[in-house]
Amino acid sequence: MFAASPSGRPIPAGRPADVLASAIDRLGELPEHGLGANAALARLTEVLAEYDVDLAHPFAAAHLQPPPLAVAVAADALAAAGNASLDTYDSGPAALAVERWVVAALTGLAGFGPGADGVFTPGGTLSNLTALLLARDAAAARLGVDVRSDGVAALPDPVVLCSEAAHFSVQRACAALGIGEHAVRPVAVDPLRRMRPDALDSQLRSGGTPVAVVATAGTTDFGSVDPLHEVAEVAREHGAWLHVDAAYGFGALFSAKLAGLVDGLSLADSVTADLHKIGWQPASASVLLVRSAASFGALERSVAYLNPEDDRAEGYDGTLGRTLQTTRRADAVKVAATLLALGRAGLGALVDRCHELARHAAGLIAADPAFELVGGATLTTVVFRYRTADESRSDEVNARLRRRLLRSGEALIGRTEVDKATCLKFTLLNPNAREADLVALLALVREAGSAAERLLEGVA
Image (cartoon, rainbow, N blue to C red; front, side, top):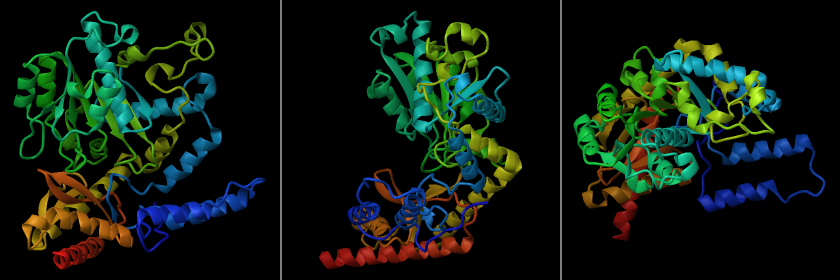
């Protein structure tokens, strides 16, 4: 189902500059006449096998970056061979049909009705950007402002509300959309790192034009899910667009055990889902879902050389009016292959397995005096710290031990910051990993932490 791990290390050993220089050197100079297809592919295969990350390795546990399913990889190659584009009907009719089928399946999972729609994007950041563009234009239209033609200057004091734990792409989107990063008002979270509806209500009452409320279904570090029903009620009361960033958490819908975590997605105006996270797709496979297809009106565009109005009237249209992109590859093909091959239950079994691994890792960490469990295991992440004899050096030791593992190539684990403290993170998206692998991985972390402590003691 997944490719086997080809190497003994999850990442190449060595300093970053040396690894990159060595890989570039192996590629050689630009040839004048070419090496031929076989030789070129052989050289690239060698470089990628030796110098790239090995996501199938059980010690690759840093990011929301899974080993891809073999069926998805094959289907992705199939899509590339066809080279269809989704912007117009005559650029890829079969690819359009596949995307519509996948979008219908995903909107159904989200609980949206028959009027829903969606579009694939290059990633969650672009899905969130597109959602906030739709929200911005909808908020402006309610005030009689046409920001598409006239810009955002006439939109008075726009504000976007999201939790303190929301993804940084919310700020990035606001900067790109011209309403500015300062328009983002962070909302306080509860002890489980979920947005507090009372704090949201208070923020919305403090003034400004509410462009959107962005709830998170699966924070990057902890997998926390905001209380969607309560957040939706507050957003509705204030007339704000509700976007749910479920880039991480959407995959919980495949699992009968975990689907309840994201109950309330159907109340959103728009939802981001990344199937190159929980979905085991080759990047990229993000999709923006909207509860009403009319929401895409802000992006409508008719161009004489692509989709003239009379052609559109006859059905010769594509997705030019749903996205900021023009040429757009058929990323839905690999998702369709996965859904057809595994079904909801098959994907759900993979989700459940990774969740079990996260719970087991959390248990091991909590029982080991060398570590402090900080949180997680809501979905597939676990956040923790290596305990140091000298607490004043804890942040430096935790940072150093991770780099030590990276430089040795022995393990690839994540790093984050919680309450201004440097923490480590396991992101467990390899269903083939075993409980014994977690024991071995923690042993490597423990050894690296001890070595980092000794080194600092010697320097002192």
